[in-house]
Length: 185
Ligand code: 5GP
Image 1 (cartoon, rainbow, N blue to C red):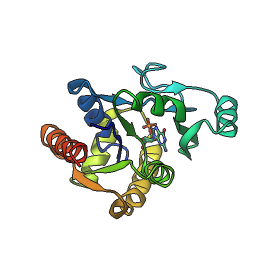
Image 2 (cartoon, rainbow, N blue to C red):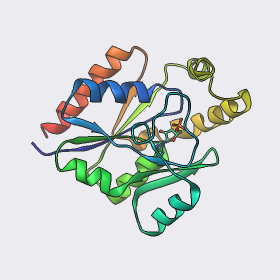
Image 3 (cartoon, rainbow, N blue to C red):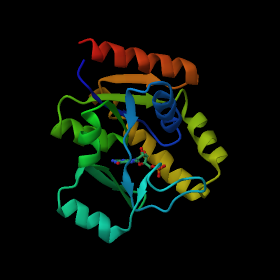
Image 4 (cartoon, protein in one colour):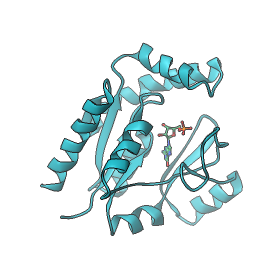
């Protein structure tokens, strides 16, 4: 069976990080890609595990060397998918990218075989509640993220699959089914 590159996208606070980590934890044939970012680590985040935390000049030099499969700049920080990391892992396993919608669409332009999955919230109020509960950002920043949500949701028709993330186990099972369908194609 061939290894497949999957992207999970969805607005901030939709819970895609939790779903992605669960998929990797329970399926040894799936590896989560680690992105580079210039944003500062949150409490509990570990360099080389959650992200490669690098500074802006290092990020810009990696862009110049064509080191990213895609990258984007939002919330005043850069985020990028390291090209080598993904394609080396893909030799051994399925790879999961947990990136924003623009990132997912850019990957599709470069690598048509990618499978794009969008997680959407059951309601917008639910997302705001989750962001506030996370307690890592000011209300102003949370409101900025909320503005972006509408933009991200407007792109869902360009994704291969759209999954409503209401109950974690149900979402997990639905994504597992998608993976099986794609593996058996
Ligand atoms: P956070 O700061 O909450 O970790 O991530 C902010 C946003 O950046 C999320 O939507 C996340 O999915 C996205 N993101 C994380 N890594 C990447 C990446 O490598 N590329 C792109 N385009 N977006 C990313």
